[in-house]
Image (tube, rainbow, N blue to C red; front, side, top):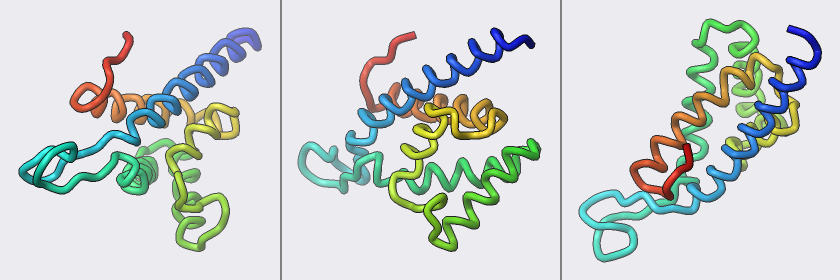
Length: 137
């Protein structure tokens, strides 16, 4: 692929990451009803999707480590180790937002971005279709 093709591909990743970051911001504030009732009404327990952000990133990390893509596995292994050690790279505050922001700023290895964005997109689209706003194409 020539340099013009790489620039177009990188621009597409930036645009996709920005879209996913915006989608996450809007979805993360929606409620998830657990139990008998809706979080908006009577009964049941209500959580916001952002209460599951650590779980989402842990799932992505575990899947990434087992992905069979050496660069992806190495990235998520390091991320998990940093989280256990409490370093800035692995900080547990808003980790999905951080990953998407790093992809948007082109600060992730290309292989990680190529692997990560479709997984996050599938996950967020699935949730949005069930509980969230209408999505465009």
